[in-house]
Length: 374
Image 1 (spheres, rainbow, N blue to C red):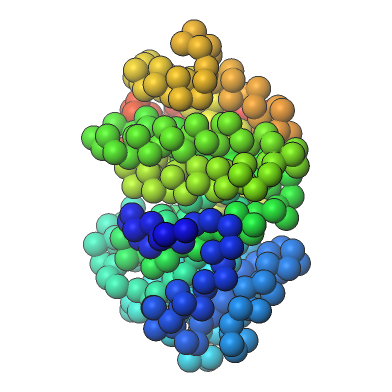
Image 2: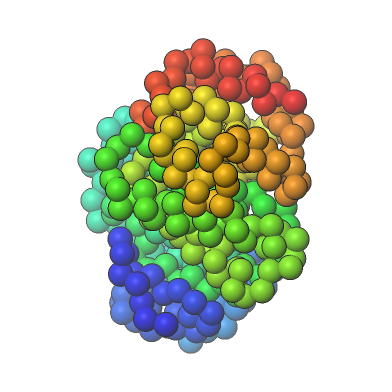
């Protein structure tokens, strides 16, 4: 297939992974650091990538579910020790975000926290190392996103946003998602849906992003159940991967309360919470909270999803969660209710908060969390 040039270079379709050596050559990367996690390695996907390369790359595989500042330092140490000149990120959002963190700190002075969005650090981010992102989930959109979410040494999960953090090339081969376990296919797929919905609802003016978000939501909604149940063919996996990609392209417009809350919760040391699962749990309540301010957009979204105008979107999202086996709520995941006030405060300060369509106070965030403490 022909490359797509939209925000960044995108190689999309079955078999495009085979073109990785050409992509690296175009970017003048001949000593890559490969970043992935142990699950991706166990699935044989790291070997699929390394088998295409003339020389075995340096590797950093100790990526956690929520990438940390300590892991950025460890990955950077390998990068420097091996005299690398670029990064290949293989996996879901965690390895790709970690790769962005390493790319940032390899080219910028000072500590990581100074570059966080909420501290105005985005303006200080300049050109970074070239990153080639190879997604193995249909979910985060990190392969084309300008953001990295990293949990700092302080325990706060913060966003780092800059066009310089967008990978130079996304190699999107739906074959790379075939081994994804059902629970991760569900959680990452609903993560992609949350990107599309929150982008659409964001009050910023960007009609092209809204059109992309609507198309992405349509693809995810139509194919996620087949992918999770194992009934998906290559076409369905490709549709899910494109839906996730479109979510990543669209959320340049801004996200909202779902992500403000999930970013806060994702910084907890215990329990370790999966970002997509959190978004799936939080999304119905946030849709209800925002409904009065986004009537026309909800109508357009329901039409794109094949729903009747009088159907309750939040109820349909809850029903989808149940069908896909998403945990019932935060208590099921082991969240202590005592942490909720602090999570509400962190959400209010999160970079996704200002683009929620309805103004939310700390008390609103606390109520949204309490409502899913089941």
